[in-house]
Amino acid sequence: MNIKLLEKNICKNLLKNEKDLINMFNLRNSVCNTRFFYIDNFIDSNLLFKAFNEVSKIENFSLRDTFREKKYTLQNISYDVCPTISIITDVLQRTNVIKIISKITGINNLMADSTLYASGISKMDKGHFLNPHIDNSHNKNKTLYRRLNLLFYITPNYSSEFGGNLELWDFKIINNLKIPFKFNRLVVMETNSTSWHSVDHVTADVARCCISNYFFTKESPEKYQYYNITSFSGRPDEKLKRIYGVFDNYLRQKFANISGYTRGRNSLRN
Image (cartoon, rainbow, N blue to C red):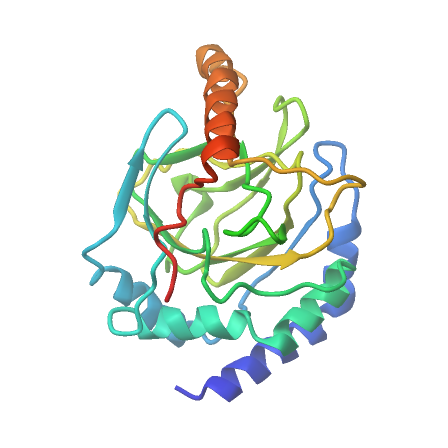
């Protein structure tokens, strides 16, 4: 695989659509304040077919199965098992790519994280879901603020009717804007203290696979310094989960503040 050519094509695709992506990212809607853009046909589809086939070879997925979510994750991506996915992930973190995305979003001083903290591969099967949540605000060492979430969808022949679509919620988690899951679509969304988002239930017997990356800055996205763990809530019709989530978030936040422990810190790329 020609890595330099892949980087060149990604940059070319972003620049070709730069004006539209800037407008999309800054477009205000009546549902949520979370800014985002997405771009389809992001890279050569043949490369993504290879990436998707690599997922079936992974034997060490971790299953997360709580009221918060149900999905498989793999954060320590190995070149031995997932060479194509590893290369795509690394190219997305190249300086030239980051500079263009920084220009599109207007967020200065963006940087990647070579340890891939909280990044990696997620696989969701039938019945899996991800409830409304805000992401952990920082990197592993709590020295950088998480600013952008890059979600790259790699499952071929996937229909939005299968579920597994990204949902961006308002502050009260009452209404959401849905961004359909689509093969070879890159979604870039901002992350801050109110960027509630989720994935609706997968209803088809199809593996929904996504490569995720994060960009960081030293500066806070807010006008103040803060730290929050990944915090969950329930959907509007899940009253008990919403109540339970308040206590669950409080206890996990207290534990993180005291111990310094955050989930995922033991699954870093070396």
